Image (cartoon, rainbow, N blue to C red; front, side, top):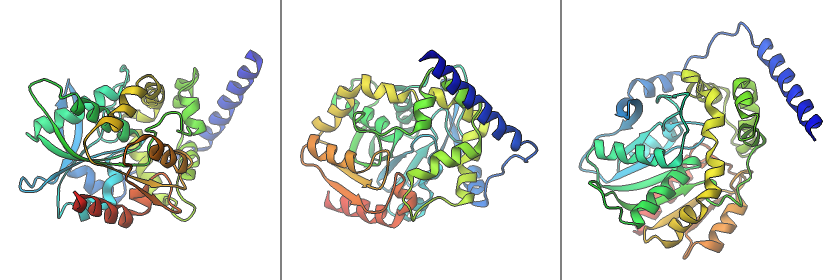
Length: 323
């Protein structure tokens, strides 16, 4: 077994090295024009000495929607529904620590608990106490922790009232989550090596298959995502960020229980062609969550808000009207 493992590591090193060498001399990516505008409009706030990038449409007269992005991307994911929703809601979103335009410290142990702390810190910074949450992927788990805290009526100097929760494809049930090979490698004993040798070609090949057959990302979209991931050499931290895969099992009772016990209205919108959190997640959700409210999107993969933003908008608005 050790010999097989050594051979595997050797092959990985040689393969990644060849890819790295083949890309020598290619200039660094620049953000696409739309992403440049997004980046230029970002604000920052301080969280324990780290700069956290966020966007806020700043209309105090409107109901607040907090949008929480997934792994390994950033709040830029919400671009296709941002302009439509901002006419009706005050939208707030941030790049979590280690992601996108926010700081990416190398000497940290990243946790879902701290990412939830950061979301709450931003809401406190903006003096917001009532919030609707729209989350995706990794963001689903952060939202689950926030709901768990809300359920407990946590006694501190700042209480957030969660009015509604909409979850997009994510590993909310660890036993049903189909981790990608690259995630498994990153979360293994050679994770730091996999991070160190990561390239855009490897990212593209592992990322594209989670989309539906007819809704694959464009070359520019992949370039923009890689630009965001590699800021401050963030791609070399992936093995630390992906540790949440283990956290989901350790805190399963708390985070799944949060959805089972809460009085917060919840909607699950799921692209069922997703190989990571598709049909099996929907089936498990219906099995475990009381009075499940679910929308299944045919031929849509892991990123419904990118692949089919018009359907996500339609069902989100319908859900909010029903409340």
